[in-house]
Image (tube, rainbow, N blue to C red; front, side):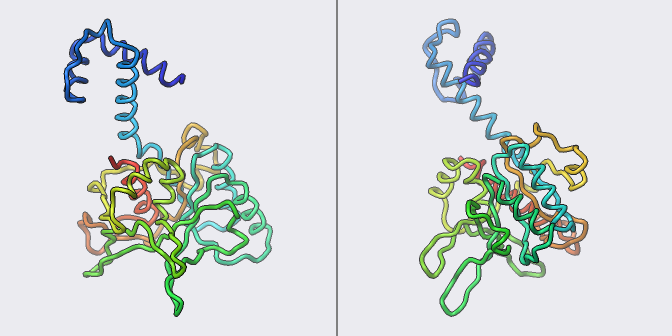
Length: 284
C-alpha cells in the first residue's frame, strides 16, 4: 500500500505536464476523456500499475545476483551461503554438486547451513535406466534439506563443431509420470510464481534460449567479495541469488550462438541458467 501511495504521488507530478498524459494515452491506445486535474483515483491507480509494471520488466536483471563459488571447499561455500542467507534473499539457487558426505566439520557446517535456507533450489540431472527416465540429485542426501526445491540442469546442446545450448527443456516426466521442472524454471517460480506459470502456459515443452545477443549483464560477486563484506543486504534482499562456478578456467563453460571465437567458450553454465531465469521473468 505504501508503494502504491508513493507511486500515485509521483504519477500526479508526472501528469502535471500535458506531454506525459499524451505519452500515456499513446501507450494504452486510447484517449482519456478528462483533464489531468480531474483524473479519478482509479485512473491514477491504473497508471501507477502501468508504470510499476514497466519498471519491473526493465529491472529483471537487477533482481538476479550471481556469486562465484570458484574452486573453494565445502567449508568456504558454507560460509558464503550463510552470509547470503542472512541478508534475506527471495531465492537461493545452487548450481553446485556436493556428491560426498564424510562427516567432517566442513560437511556438518554445510549441511546445517543448507537446512537454514528458507527458499532453496538445488540441482538434479536427467538420467535413465531400464525403468525409464528418472531425476538424480547431484548432492548427497545429507546436503539436501527436506524443504528444498529441485530442478534439472541437464542442457540440450547442438553438436556441430562445438557444443551450443540453443534450447532448453522446460519440464520432463519421469517413469512414474511425475514432472520435474528445469532448474531455471524452478528458480523463476520461487521468485514469481504467477509470471512463471504464465510462461509455462504460453510455451511448449522445449523453448529456444533467448540470449538477448549476450546483452544481459548480471551483477556478480566473487567469494572474496562476500567473505570480506563487500556484499550488503541492499544488494540481495528480496532477490534471486544464484551460486556456482564462474572461473577461473573453462570448467562448465559453453559456446553461445554469438561467440566470435570458435576456440574459446564464452558463457559459464551459471550465466546460461541465469539467462533462462531472466527470459522467463521477462516474458509477456
